[in-house]
Amino acid sequence: MKVLIVQVGTPVNPDDYKDQQLFQEPTITQGMQYFRYGEVVNNMQTRESITEQGILVDHIYFTGRKNPLNCIKAAIKIRQLVKGKEYELVNQYWGGMSSFFTAFLCPCVYIISLLGSDLYGQYKQNGSRTLMGRMLSFFSQLTIVFASGVIVMSGKMKERLWVSSRKKAIAICEGISLAKFFPIPVADARKHLAWEMEKPVILFFSSDAYVKNMPLAKKAFEALKEELPSAQLFMVQGIPHAELVWYYNAANLLLMTSYHEGSNNSIKEALACNLPVVSVNVGDAAERLHNVTPSAVVDSFEPRDLAHEMLKVLRKNMRSNGLDKVNEVELPNIAVKIVGYYSSFLKN
Image 1 (cartoon, rainbow, N blue to C red):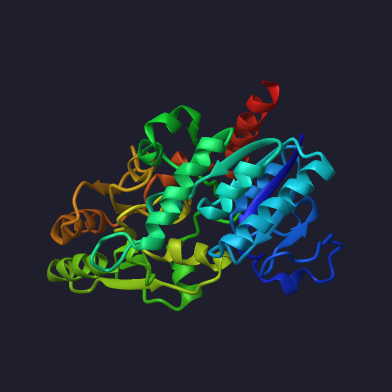
Image 2: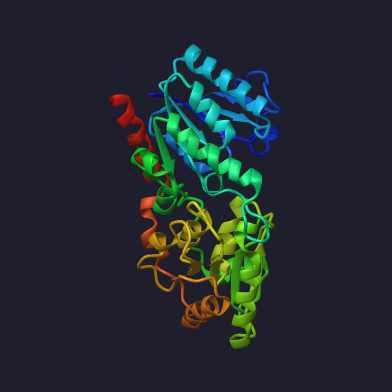
């Protein structure tokens, strides 16, 4: 099977790969790059793991996707590549205009993978969707009309699709690496980070994006401190992905307050490190945290409801059984599901 994976953006730290034998075609938008055999991928590890299933995978990245002309040029170039190199299937990650034009012109099996905000849209501080967010969501939905299939990250996302498109969809979340995320003794992790041993620490992945709902996290933490003054909130921002394993193992709790998610990787990575999680009911949080103790999913956006559940978890002062529950989202297992989905189209 020969597959072309299309991603928006450019590879992380492309300078790190200068000495590798990579095939690069000239850019056709503001940074379109073509790499053979997946030797350079973004930190979405699922893409790379597909190659380990014996599938020949090439990767394309392109930027400038907010310009319709760039999207059309990229779609034409991808069409030429597919014909010239005889790809059997194209899988594009991220929707919007960039996926719509590619799906419309693609001469082979085309699958769109929607990751979250490309389906839900982007939001203003007052909670309404931006005009660009509405367009992003609309073109993502329209892409599916021309696509052979669609992969979404959770059942909630599938329900958000146009009714006529749902029969094309399958829910397969992003995978995580259990070689990168695993339990470490709390004392060792805190020593590594130079954290005090006594104070309970809540992790929150900080972002200026409205969708992450940082104000709710801060309000819930302040409510918690009324009952547990020693608690600390650690905002995770700008930390290399490879270093996160220390933070998951040093902390006492991960807090998630987003308005929407596809399938949040930090929840799965936290579970792999046996870190308890308290989350609002977004994405696949309820599915991931089912039978994970201590942890909780809260069906409200009330700060005190979140604080109450955090306090219950912190008072138990124990790690979770999360590692026992994440086998199904380990990278090789997710890759097998995706390749199986690919194969169902090629058999037909």
